[in-house]
Image 1 (cartoon, helix red, strand yellow):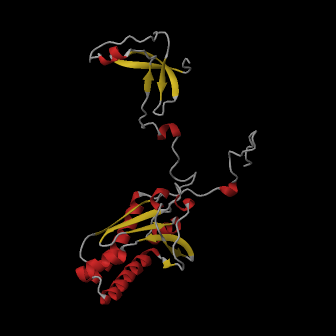
Image 2: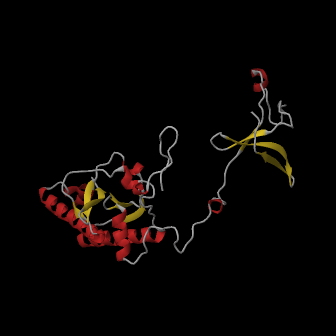
Length: 270
């Protein structure tokens, strides 16, 4: 489809070459991935005798959660497709293993081996491998809305965050027999009409009448139950505003089934 060119030369539509897939994950897929991560880390915790709780949760990754963090890149199928953030992992493991003796020289080798084994077990579940280099940060496009990127948050014995590109999650889902993430037009589940999709959404509206002016003395003397006369003629429509203050309709005050109501009109008066 050719893009429409406006008078200022801007193109409101992009060509097919710029199209990107929209990915999302079902709650069962994210829960299954979280359970797999939990199982890998629990086996590591038991193997090393690490006391304490250890939980994991998978959510949709967002750009806001990546700001100001140092991430270690991980490879999937030869490409960087995951990022790990666990700056205090070694210190937390050392405390769990040795308590007050965690700073002893002999402890460092054991802690290093323990941490390495934990990441090895986790990487094995997700088919990840360490990437050479120092640190990198996922690009905004990697975690854009509907990108399919997933953030895994681990808390307890060790605190860590892992951002997974959709290819990693999709490969894991395929290995466990989950359906693909993407939904295309013409699939078995038809798309709902926009009016049906938003039919149950509640929208707050405000009805604004013409205001009045009071001197400061009258304002200070106002009491509950006082009546203010507004210079708003009944034949003039009120303004019906949305939550942002934008005018949507005009409206006439009235009653319906014993309750106050507003009859909407298309063209509100200035």
